[in-house]
Image (cartoon, rainbow, N blue to C red; front, side, top):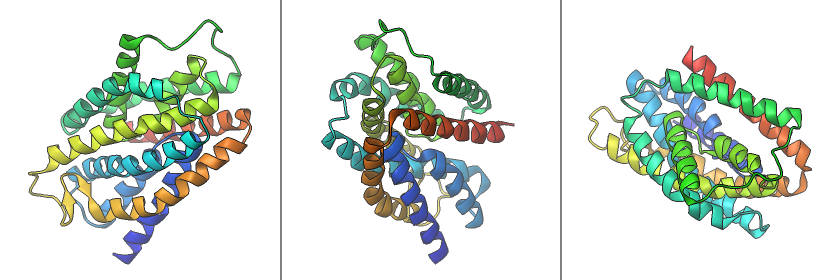
Amino acid sequence: MLLSILVYCVLGAVAGVLAGLLGVGGGIVIVPMLVFAFKWQGVPQDLIMLMALGTSMGSIVFTSISSSLAHSRNKNVNWGVVRSIAPGIVAGTFCGSFVASHLPTRFLQLFFVAFLAFVVSQMLSGRKPKPSRHLPGAAGMSAAGGVIGVVSSLVGIGGGTLSVPFLLWNNVDMRKAIGTSAAIGFPIAAAGCLGYLINGWSDPRLLPYSLGYLYLPALLGIVAVSMFTAPLGARLAQTLPVPKLKKCFAVLLIVVGVRMLVNAL
């Protein structure tokens, strides 16, 4: 048990830095490591992924708060964008969490890998969107939020891997895109967390100290450390030059894509 708690704390440290530095919730690290930890603890095979996704969403609730507040102090959060995209994100994430246990995700994962490959190629090529391109209106923002929410919930990420490229493609500054994405992570995680909690509430196979598909010992270990490391990541994002930030984000997307491809094949 002590070793498991240590693993959860290390996960929290990494997730917090990622949340602050790149505007992501850390789910790309948390989910695969929780899968490994839950297998080691003897969690039933058909519960492992659901509990990893639910616990990851629960941790992102807290890392997104810490990260977005740090970015907000640096004036790098566009709260207007957050308000306009949040309704679609909440609806999409909540629905996605309910279908996660029933919908095969292989096609979605392969599609998402192709999407990430396109985004990485765009970011590393240095190509820029047309100067005339800008964020869509209320309907377009809600639709984009719905897509981001559904995909984030089904694959267990905080949404930054989708929201940052979306904002960049619409000529939002890189630092503001990262800060705004960190704030967008909160409604994604809150809706997803609630969905996984409700969906797993009556599952008789759950481990002790679980709330639905949220495993509390893992959640508390991750949150206890990530709340302190997220501001560190935000400070790094403020000082690193934009080209380096773009390369860091591209590397992150490559890691996400490879992980999803391995899981899907």
